[in-house]
Image (cartoon, rainbow, N blue to C red; front, side):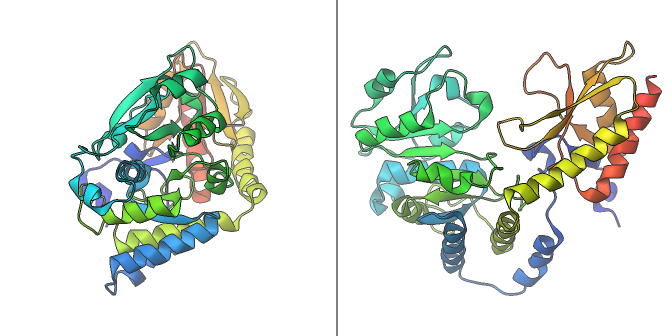
Amino acid sequence: MDIYEKLGVKKYINVYDTMTMYGSTIMDDDVLDSYKETSQYLVDINELQDKIGKRIAELTHNEAAYVTTGASMGVSLAIAACMSEGDRYKLSKLPDASGMKNEVVIMRAQRNPYDKAIEVPGAKLIEFGNLAGSFDFELEGVINENTAAVYYIKALNYSKATMPLEDVIRIAHKHNVPVIVDAAAQLPPKENLWKLTEMGADAVAFSGGKAIRGPLSTGFIVGKKWIVDAAKIVGFPNRGVLRGGKVSREDMVAMLLALENYLKLSDKEYDDILRRRVNYFLEGLKDIKMFKLGVEEMGPVGQIYPRVEIAVESDKVDVEGFVKALKEGEPGILAGLPLQKPYNVFYINPMTIMDNQLETVLNQIKKIAKEYE
């Protein structure tokens, strides 16, 4: 029985992006199979967190790691650690931040829909710079005795008018202020799992449900041991303001297996898989006169991988109309528009599709194109 059909929920094939609102992506078979095994016995969650964190740290060449409910909770936990400086009593008080450092510095140009995660443990955002630029002297000027951390979002769409991460780290560390990086979608390349902390970032938050293809509800932080140790005190399964970020034992194991699978492939092997899928669509759509085909060599927020770029050149339908028709079709196809208007192309993302879905997507695109001939 198809549970989605029973519930009356429309199903989609995703060639858009690892979008949380649509469930992100699809897990590998061995990751899915792990759920039955791990559900058969109960374990001490703290012990499981420790063992899995140690394994993630080894895989990513970091001091420590901690499984979270998505990158957003990873940011909240890291900020709580910086506010409390690991003090158990201070952690127990949060979100009451009285008597502790409670300011987190952020570039105005990097304000984003996800930075509310910073405020969850009780921190206050302090902006510097503007949409035209952000400068060293401005960062120097806002750091004071109440500064708990500097937050940096590592994403192409928030990079305009921002300082390089290297400069942010240099200035923050001069004042003994940690730097927390939100790199939720910054894979591939896989070297980001250790490159950002090697640059000096004190903690980096990643999503487990995007390129890694683990459970949507998972993520992890990597970085300094003192930050991870403090996060454990206030995070699940322990008591505190962030206890609600619960990760099941099944999800923890599944995320670890997905990460191991992701790291087994070299960047070239991973790229070869994606380019084979890209070429499948370039070949299959080359005779459709209303399309102008190309390859975009970067993901929507700066990840390094190829996407099929399709311009719709027709008097009968524009790009938005074509993408809407794909979504409303059977099966529904989620195709990607650029992050900002005007929309003149749409994208097919090879990261979020399975090989057994390629033909279905190709045929659906051809079908709708034919309807507009």
